[in-house]
Image (cartoon, rainbow, N blue to C red):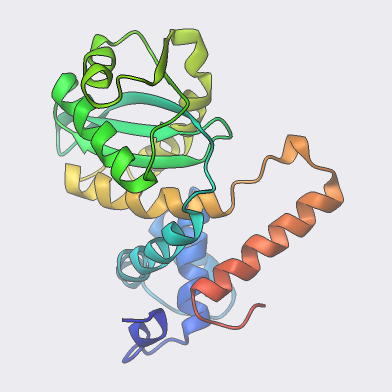
Length: 235
């Protein structure tokens, strides 16, 4: 099903839906904040409707972004995991990013052991299609044991201080966790990050490496791509 077909039988125009989804995943906003921003523009819609749009259209847009990102990530993988409380229980959010901060993949798991690390690495290899040149992790021994089985020839650097790139990638999730007052379940967390991170990749620009003019051009290109992914004319 194309994205254009997804808009069928929806009362609001596609550009309103795409803009609401962009607001929700691009910025650390709650559903009610998006509702208020739309209301300021004369668009009366409930936060429950924004939630339904975010889940339905956000997933479709994220699925369209992933193939366009294939082969564009770096060859240095940073892997790490953080604890997240979901439904009153602790789970582990495993995430991999490259040297530029682009998110490669995410996986919510109930354990922090060799099996969990192995699952993440298998998922990464399947999606990326090739192993990294270098893998960087913290001191968790599960990474070493899993890498020995699945990627024995890859250089592995294990040092807490080397993984600062990864720590920064957690900030958007932590911000949203505070705004949402936690995630309802592991499935809720997995669904959110699986949509959020591809969209964040699209608008992730290394501003410190660009001139102001180059940054504006890249930002405009990212917005044009967003409207193309939403199958609407570029604004």
